[in-house]
Length: 361
Image: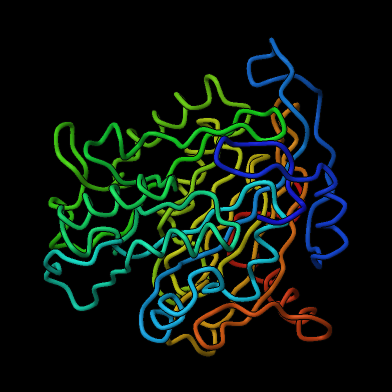
């Protein structure tokens, strides 16, 4: 899975501890060089590990021309953007599809599904965990959910935000990266009105982790914070085609930051939104499309967000944010370089004008 990664989770191959230097040299950077504050673990009682990086991509599915890419070569289905994912110590995306080859589509306009080889494609591209908490995660109902969980288990690929019960859906993926304990939670604020009840996980019923239940999500973050050095929340949220964070997004981001989340990232709008610091935590309101068919204009603007974490810091654990812009062509994001990358990065920086985040803590 590449040569730039540090020591981490059970299923991954070891990576080099030189990642930070490699990433800085290879990714065009935007943003933060703030130093972490006083050292110590999450609980102040043990070493918390060395700095590490996490790469994030936005919405992924395998519809249209992407299905042909997946069927012909799962190992290269995500295209050249895989390099930016593999260079990070941990990488995650929003998998916006049911993983099933059967079941009945839900009563909605657009339904997405992919075969189990989708997990092979993600892993081959350097992705380590995916959230399936989104408005397409149950496009093929409970049977599709069960198939998705079974396919992930068979592939040994972890997913969050979806489960047989609410406890399972809100349960974080836990891993160790460079000696640091990391917890990743997925949840969605976006559900079709006619499907909210059927798709929301309950005490005894399958479904998605719903961020509409903000107290439940806040409680999940607080619980994860108890024994994790770093807590990450990946959300499906926002308003389609709106490049500005909504009041609902801003309110939830502040609640999660107060609850102990170190990084809050998300997608759904199909366009890029702002990223930056809020209350000393890092928030990215919208990563846009990532591996997504039928993207053009603003919806083709994409990229890889790489955050550097210092788990020994008491509060500000994100010490750097790098944005490597890309443009979707043929359904896959293709990294930009030269003047095109500089222009795209400047546009990304400008998105903070309509958000409550800053370039530095």
